[in-house]
Image (cartoon, rainbow over all chains, first blue to last red; front, side, top):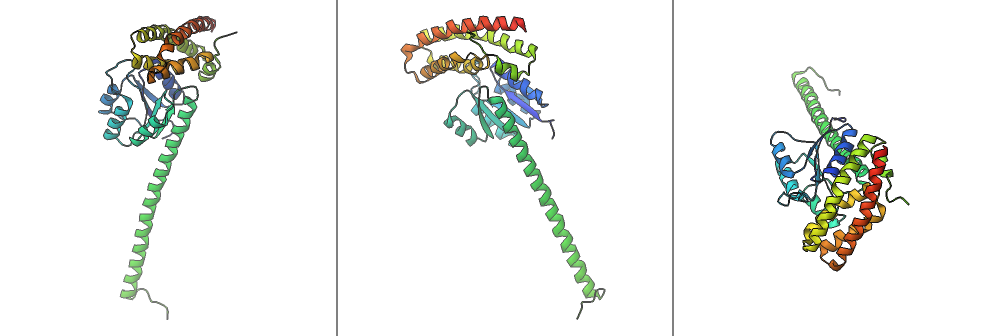
Length: 169
Length: 114
């Protein structure tokens, strides 16, 4: 997947959104910024990201806007393969646990360290994808190997029956 | 003594002056409006809304390196969110306003030199 990763960011705070977008673009990812969760959900009808960075509090500008946790549930319902990183200014275990319960991969607290933490978590997600891909590969190899052994055993049995293969004393 | 410390912003933008200017200018737009909002919300006892505004300002204050206001804005968020010590909010907001206004002047001057 190299750096061709597609990352969507949902953030209603203009400055914060711009900073996350610039940071991820600088890492070589394709980034799309949405200032509402509703905008993201509309986009998900036609396209989907690999990773979603989702703000927990999405109603600081528009009070009627859907909250991050509701968007998280909807995104996971639509496409469970999208890994969601929630982020918020709230350094709260309860908030973090709540987001994980609904399928978020991890939780970041906004602030100066948020950007390096974001890099770390994206690295973790990519490693997890690599492990899953390797597992799939080995499982496929295993199936081939079993089929090959079965074919060889079958051929030996046929050979023995037809006299083509003579077993030693 | 300077009220701002642009070390984080310089590192974050990798010294890209255009980006630094962009973020500073965003903060200079947001901060005065947020302060006016916080004052009105406190007067009208709209504490939940006040909490949201303080919550948004909190990381931005940190990005601009206005270190001495970090605890102050956290307290505004906390008091408004828990609706405790609300009698202290006016004073905390007034302090934030005075100090943030001075910091904004410094930011504006720093941006003009970039």
